[in-house]
Length: 240
Image 1 (cartoon, rainbow, N blue to C red):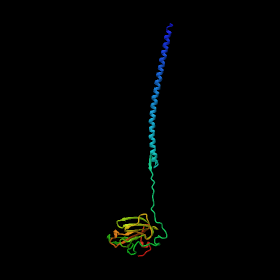
Image 2 (image 1 turned 45 degrees about the vertical axis):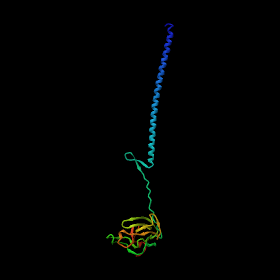
Image 3 (image 1 turned 120 degrees about the horizontal axis):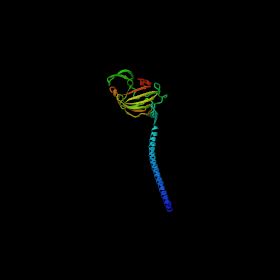
């Protein structure tokens, strides 16, 4: 090899080195570009998953809210089922307390109006002139003018005030000792359901009894002890 060729050889080596460095640099650029693209794709996928996670958390919150109201159980197939539990509060009706002054058959009771009886208590069938049939008369009809005041026979608790097709306007009172009285055929009423009344207190005024219009003006008065009809005059220790 001649001395002139030595510089040429050096130039070739330098050129080769530059080409190698360029190849290496290009390879590095391609490598890092590829990694960057992959990272971007991974990050995007991660972002999507986070969004899905947020939606699931919202659903869980809804389920937790429902769980507070419902009990989740599993049936025989292992599937979940929801049972709704309702808290039902029942309120017992108030009753008149029994005492020495309101013992049926023993205590003192006032007449609800006039003492005159136009039709007494009977479990036997008797003729009803208005209805034209025979039926038991499990009440006492006290003679009383229309518009007259009707009084409570003893202290008591008003159970109801209602209209009946046969009996007219009825005030039902618990007088204690399992004694309940029905004042039937009223026109005006001064008391309401839930009121406490005292003996002799005015309950209202007399009207008419629809199924006994054939009789003279009267108060149709019924009493029951422990749910069974009894003669009002007996329970009040009165006589006809």
